[in-house]
Length: 396
Image (cartoon, rainbow, N blue to C red):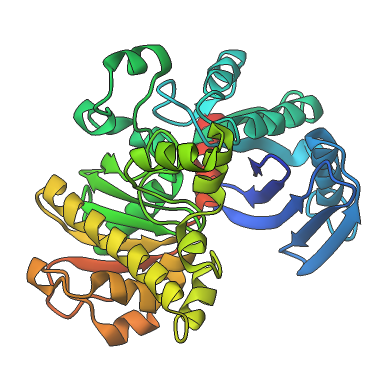
């Protein structure tokens, strides 16, 4: 049985085809610049070790899915004979609001509930719905599953997810903390429990990439997370500001005569590491630039300090801590950043072994020998997690 995993962006489609239940990747690819004059598709037939790049106009998501399906069944670059070999499709959906506390089969009712969340996820949910619609048109009778970034965080208690604003905002508009990266947090938490043989451990998961978030997981459940109503809250990120005094935007809007839309764009796309450094939103570039550029060094220091603060806060929230896991592009690949974050935490029982840390890749621990709190790098695999949920819901 084959499961196709789809991650639809506003102008992109990322995909992987898995053989189930072993979750073996058969093919993967990324289509970008949908709707522009020239779109770009990079497709890899993993089994055959072959890669195909296409540059042509792709008008919309339906045309994009048709192109992807033609490659999946292509004689030279394909991995299946025809579309009937796709048993189910799993869709990443960013925002499920309060309607979904777990992955679900996509029905007409589910689609309406996803549509209802478009107000609080205007950049993400409409794109996800386009991907669902395109697949439904082409694969008419194939079961589909929605896997939500927010669902893992639906166990957060009300005192942690509510904001101290007029309660009617929640009643009218469902203004509250939802959290994101839930599929990643859940996956690496599960891997930690497996490799340490500690079921239902208390773990702080640090998903650090261009988008970054920290989650406190207690006995298998998310009890708090750094992102909020949107992915803007929390850590310093590549281009997002993270936590700040909410009076800052209104103050600057008045001074600079900016609209709400303009300020939203600044906070989401021109702030964070990029805004502070003025150099880059890529941590690799900043690590190099910091050797001579004080603003790049400041951006790195702010990033690490913010993660450290959340670790301390979530240790208090959890009461007892079994481990800290680092994942995501920065979390998995930058021993330097991991070391900076954990520096000076020995008195809290968090003891980083510098030599182990420098070598940690894939799935590896790097705490000092005998330390009670485990430190792990665990590579995330959200596509695999989506494939497994889809298999369990649609095919088992």
